[in-house]
Length: 268
Length: 238
Image (cartoon, rainbow over all chains, first blue to last red):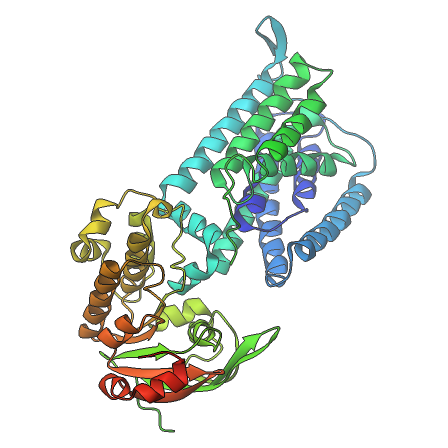
């Protein structure tokens, strides 16, 4: 989820609205009658929409490449507000929810408490996805190219690689992950106006805790916050919302650059 | 001026938001020859290198490689045309291993580039460190890596910006040997240097820059025989 923030040095505040769009896609396609084919269709449509949106965002933000983070943030925030309003017009202001796919809609006992199966699956999926992204980024040549672009994109260009294409692909993958997360999160979170800002803040917390510009940090932060958020809500229901911000405050006080952040900025 | 070199820089102008830095630079590089570019701090040597590489946008003039106009092209296009950069401060990617640096640069080389293995034979020290993150290497090893990264792209022209910066004398000599070997292979080299020992040791010709323009050019022995000029242009005892 935090690929674009952490890795491409762009404050993409449209991230939340991509998640929202994924969730509405799930509502639109799956609706009241959850089935595996409908879930698969929702994932495919949301994925395709996410890829297109990511490419579009990358091209727009690319025009501001020489400007400050604030300009990029304002552009993406503006697009996010427009996108969220368009989704409200299309789907109304009601809060919708869908059921988990058949077979995953039950509950099971975890540490003596009843816990929904779908949430466990979601946690597992998140961990698996994090592992896949980690392996791709840390162990493959494509990942090396992405890491090099994060560290010094000018030197990537200086060996003959069009670094704008790297950015385009990372943007698209980041956006696909966001819309996919929207579909997958729908049975747990439901969807309605305001979901985008909740998710955006969560993603910002993840990136800041992990450390801006750190691939491993972003994944680690996502996993930590994901676990705190998912399990915490059931096990420590009263304080869960504060735990994640408490963790953020603690990291910012003890280690302002994040858990895995570089000591100095990678930009040149 | 008649362009005659492999790389011709003709009246190049560029700068930053704060103002113009290059006020019409002329120079040409020939295959297998090393041009040492000297000058005081802030005269525009690094800006010249960055502008030729396409990392700073030119506002006037022309950059030609073997007759092809590269002016205003993107840095990746300029790199693929055959110009490589060893930048000031090395600018290696600290989160990549030595092997990843060389494989990445070799994969995007024009034609069939030198392989990473060729570089390991040339630089056994890098071979020993191939699985190590570049950020953990010593300054000298990082500089060797920066040079090797440029060479695996199989360039026709190499721009080196202060490769001796912060290195011990023994390492500076090794870097000098690498630069000579590059030129012996037919590469045209532009060597921006503050270290006169290195520049005089390897360069065939010396050019001096002042206030964004080339103000002197002569072959190295002639420059060394004329300490008055060196003192006037560089403010040092050459």
